[in-house]
Image (cartoon, rainbow, N blue to C red; front, side, top):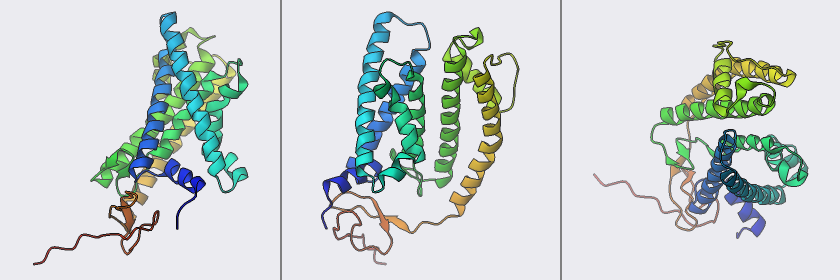
Length: 265
């Protein structure tokens, strides 16, 4: 049964197995990384011409994110539930400057970093970047990536909160230094927040550090003991790479699957 346009768009926005789906999600990931890099660069003193060019690039990326958000909303089966889902809220915060115009809420784009957590999926070592042969390595990479993402977000928020009133947060590197020392509970004490919001964020960082590591280790154990029923069988119709072990037809396009025959002894 052929999929409608809406179903196709919904599938490729979430898919990481077919070439089309992987290409779309890699593009989104690349734009997220570029947008995050621009945010970091703009915390330093740079020439006005370069800042203007970066702002133009950021506006283009923001427009693409707005289109993506609208497409996801259009494809959602339950739009009300979709709007109030965690990742949809994060998506909306990241595109808020587009709707709020001249109001200075550009720092909200830092929430877009969470989007990467949706794109990096580990199912028997599968990611949008290819196949990871070792499940242990895949899960270890995920733990490091999750930790880095949380540190990045906290650093952006604490910088945005403190840098105008606290000279100790002069650059993004200063914010990274503070976030790492706080989340790891090292707490050197040479950099401290001055605002009430900064102090509240610091408390959240400490709590995150206490909860994050045990949670990630628990997830690692679950992944290691979980067995998968899917095997790598590339569909000749749509390119979907993984199907159930007893599947005869592609679950996406319905094409009959051709499995390799075991070699005769």
